[in-house]
Image 1 (cartoon, one colour):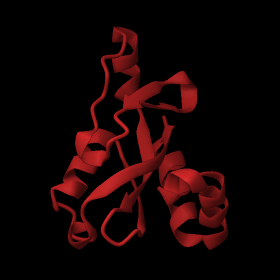
Image 2 (cartoon, rainbow, N blue to C red):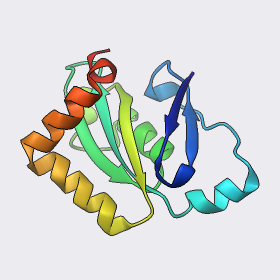
Image 3 (cartoon, helix red, strand yellow):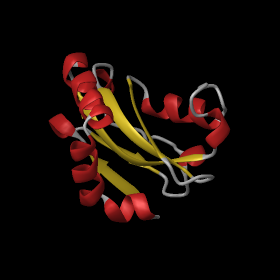
Image 4 (cartoon, rainbow, N blue to C red):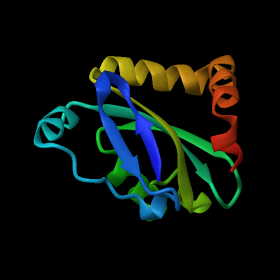
Length: 122
């Protein structure tokens, strides 16, 4: 079981088998209210071509299922995907700024990739 700790003390648990098996474990009721305000930037890795994709969403589980169901034009030829990393934010502005930073600045992505190299390598 993988345990991802995200900003503001929120915790989501995902199955380690791959993105198609993602399930969120039940959280205490007070967490469900907080999750409505969380935006995630995420990195998924194509199992087919080993390339990374960076995006952001307000519903991480739904978004990964969309990628694996070929509902995203830019990734449908590269399925299946697995989640390798995400960060959560309460501010849309912070989330989009971080996504842009990772997409547009190779140094930022390289630094993050070095930090999570074991997750990206698998």
